[in-house]
Image (cartoon, rainbow, N blue to C red; front, side):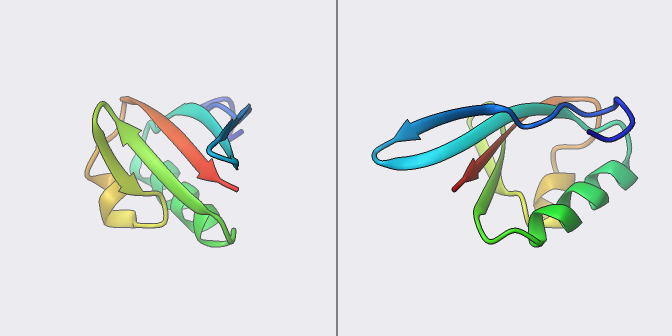
Length: 79
């Protein structure tokens, strides 16, 4: 959690034998996006950020920034 501004990733589900962890987040500013991407780059699993039917790589600063701020995004970690 980032100062109460973003939600924690907490839901876990199995899909096709793979474990996925998902949750929702709202980035309030560019600094929060940069922090998220920096943290995502440190883990070995794939991270997706979704808005509607659009999915971007959570380790891509440009991709995540393309969604902008103030929107509820779904985060999926494929672990």
